[in-house]
Image (cartoon, rainbow, N blue to C red; front, side, top):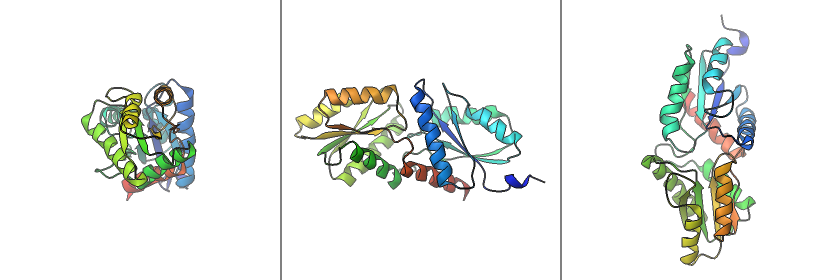
Length: 246
């Protein structure tokens, strides 16, 4: 018979990319706390694919050793690119434990649908950065060579621009053009007077620092902070967990 404390909802394992920047790990821990508040009764454990311990395989082994038989694993990723397709399945397989692991969709568009919670989080950060009255927006993402992942970023930009009623263009910090400074410059050349940058990042780090510097140099009037532990993001994680367990 399973212990009484293990008979409730299965625990949640959050899997972040990982970074050498300690601010990124702290942002993931803060989001884990926010998700625990949004998902009462579910243990929530953060993990990282690289640079920070514990890794997801170790967390899964610990949960199995504690007597859990089911786990919901949420990729803290905004696109379903290499890390979602390869690294996370490999981490689950390497745990080598008898667990029913339900891996959810990423936090970006699922089946082509951009969740309203994600858009609300992006708009909140823009407002905090004094970018709510911008007449054009650049959605700055980390970057990927995966064309499907880039298309999903484009869908977010289109939905964000439609909600704000302004043009919204995509830029990338790596792996694909255009970079943020070029995107800001082109919007200004097309007549925009107040260009703001929305940060399509979950945590601070080198990429976001570079985006901020390049955007300001190109004349952006506002650069939003990463989404980190916003309540809209925690609620989006809760939605992913619910969808995986219904």
